[in-house]
Image (cartoon, rainbow, N blue to C red; front, side, top):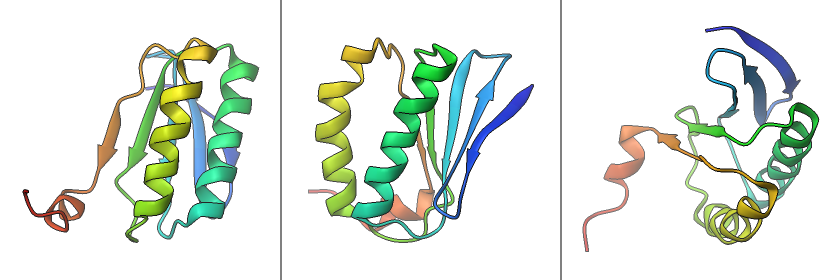
Length: 104
């Protein structure tokens, strides 16, 4: 897998994966509404910069429960990603996060 680092800070790391032709976005440990909104903006910049239409949204390193931020992300993404031509946005989450949400 050939990756090129596009952006990195304490909240998010964004690579371009030449093999799969997608952005690989790794969200880091602690997230809140502000960090998610800033990270989503940076994802958009990188998509435009690389003329990329696929994103692997990797949340495996996230350690906090960020339900407000994830709700905002779902609403924001569902509305905006298709307008940008994003055709694929798979996500990876930590298995322990699933345990925090009992079946209804």
